[in-house]
Amino acid sequence: MLERLDLDDFTARRATARAAALEYVASTGGLDLGALGTPDGFVARHRQIGTLLTYRLVLHLADDLVAQHGFAPLVGYFRAFRLSADAAGNFATSFGTTLNAFERAALARLATEPAPAGPAIIETAFPGPCGPPASAACPRIAVPSPAGTSGQASRAPPPALAAEAG
Image (cartoon, rainbow, N blue to C red):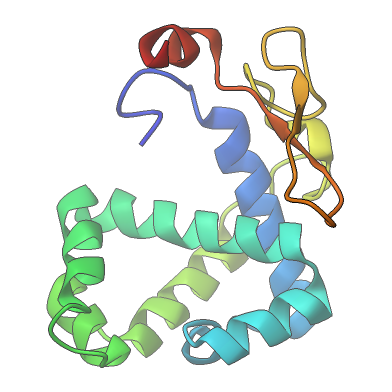
């Protein structure tokens, strides 16, 4: 979405997500998108493999779907859940292929395309106005917490968005 709005180049993110997908497959021996597509399966995988690696895998796969089919079918896939909880059926209807066929094709592409340089879990791989660590453009601010709870750090919105909100 940020790339479509000309707010981000996405080249570095795409390379890092691809590296994460390769690392994920090497760590697990496959993708198992059927399991990743369920709340319990996703939670189990991200606990086993790691949150950052799992989310970057999902980013790579979503980017792959958009590259192949466009953004509208991705939106249509999520909207289909208003009418049906059948993830496999919604996927097939939205993308014109089965989840298993997409998984096989994704694995084949990962096996044949050259791997990007660098590890997949570097925290600073996504520089930007609010990229880690906190920058002068987006300093971490304290968030007031309800009585009896500990405070959390969050990030201020980018200056352009803060000006719109103010």
